[in-house]
Image 1 (tube, one colour):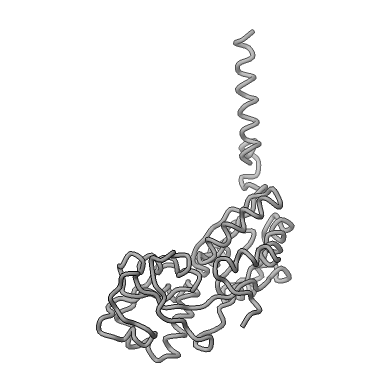
Image 2 (cartoon, helix red, strand yellow):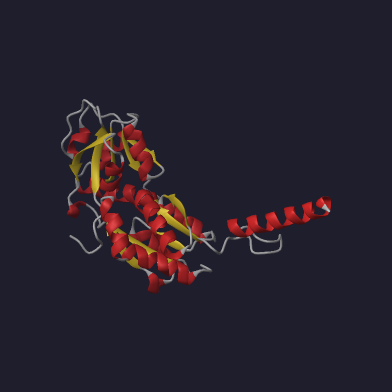
Length: 266
């Protein structure tokens, strides 16, 4: 009798495990886990959204799986048909282009945060820089910035340097990073002399870098973060719940904790 029951017990255990992990019950079922959300978000949101994801889980019982990266790269993934439910960008440009191609639910789109550009140095840097113009000094050899094609922070940096008439002169010093957190890492490790990141990234560095200058608001386009439900999401209601959480009082409190300003602030 013991040998007859053993296979049945094993089968029961495997069935329970599959149900608990959200794995498909059979090879012919849906391969995407429809119990959870996929949120593609600008990497500068990593710390704030990770905490927001925990709150979303507590409120809804659903898990938000995050895909963090450069906003432009995430945009291209959505254009290529990646299974994404919510997109949060560090710039309006990427969201506008997706809207123009009919790939987001425009009625769900919300601006939810603002940010600021800052100039950072390694914590122990001997350089005495106090303005962005000081980047032209001979002692500054390498300056890390985000990829101008895919990283909104890089695009804002380009606007800033053009505004200050610095871009042409600094071009030989520029080191391109694939996203703003890579800029932060280059500076924190002392692999470059300086970098331009968001204020929230500098805060996240926890003392590994020091901020020496902040860009004026009129030196570049407004750094506004939009998010929206992706048109092809199979979980529109759950995705909208995430958008509502981010834009609601609790989500905004989390964003402020990590240094973001509200979308309507000036």
